[in-house]
Length: 85
Image (cartoon, rainbow, N blue to C red; front, top):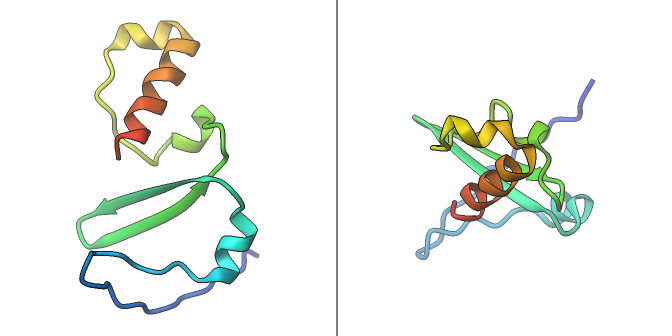
C-alpha cells in the first residue's frame, strides 16, 4: 500500500505554497505537474524527461490530431504545453 501524507499549508501573499522538504528530497530535479479540477489540486512530480505515460489522465491539451501520427512531434508538443503551465 502506498504511503499517504496530508499536510495543511497556508498560501502566502504571492500565491506560493511551500512543499515540505522531506517530499522534495525524494523528487530530485523533476518537472512538477499542477492540476486543478473544481476545488481539488493535484501536485505530481514527473520524470525530468516527460514520458507520454506521465501525462495520461493528467492533462488536457489542444493538439491537432495530425500530431498523433508522429510520436516525436507529439512529445515535443506535449512538452511545450506542459512548459507553458
